[in-house]
Amino acid sequence: TFADGVDLDFEHFAEFDQIPGSNETEAFNALILNLRAEFNGLEARWAAAATARAAAMQKDYDALEDWQKEGAKAYYMTTIAYLKEVAANDAPHFEISWTTRFNAFLPKDDNMNYVLPGSRHPAGFATDYEGDKIFPVSGEAIDTVNIMAYDQDPGMGLNLTTILLNFNAYGKVPTEKLSMGFEPFSTEVVKSDEAWVHWMRANNIGGGFVWAVEEGADCEAEAAMLNRVMQPTWRFGKAPTFTKCNANGLTH
Image (cartoon, rainbow, N blue to C red):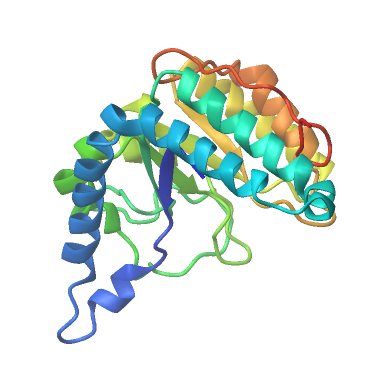
């Protein structure tokens, strides 16, 4: 696929770490560090690999019977054209993002400082302080920390600015690496989220994302709002150029 990175969404491994004989945290850190080492070695062979893959697909297509080519042409020609453009662009920075919960980093004396006044909440979660076991070890290898600010218990209201400040102050996560997740399950939520996003923009937060694309959610409006307010730019080096596909994902 020639993807330019990976997202590690290993939810709740803190609970599994409590099982005798388990060492999920150490294994997760090893995964991150080994992925970074592997990714760092891809750049030198990226273009050659894309060119070779395009040639192999052209050879496969040429070997098809004429009646087979008729149905497969759009897929093959689109993919081959894409691979040629992959090779023509600079090799990307291979991103590692880590998706975690809103409570990964907290002050030692207040594990619920991010809860809005008057909302219901438990005494704590097994995942409290989970980030303290990951970022000090693997933080240099992680490019983006995605925060699930939609995974709370019913009745809990979250202060997103406090969550972001917790990650930066207690987790030592640079603001440009932080990405806040939103769940726009109504138009009213999109409107209220905009205030948080303006704060993010003013405080150099890296970005935001929408979860999840589902019936009834106003994902398009949320994404448009995030784009308008955050004014995102290409983060790693020179932005690549690709031919836009049609609604069917094809260019040919």
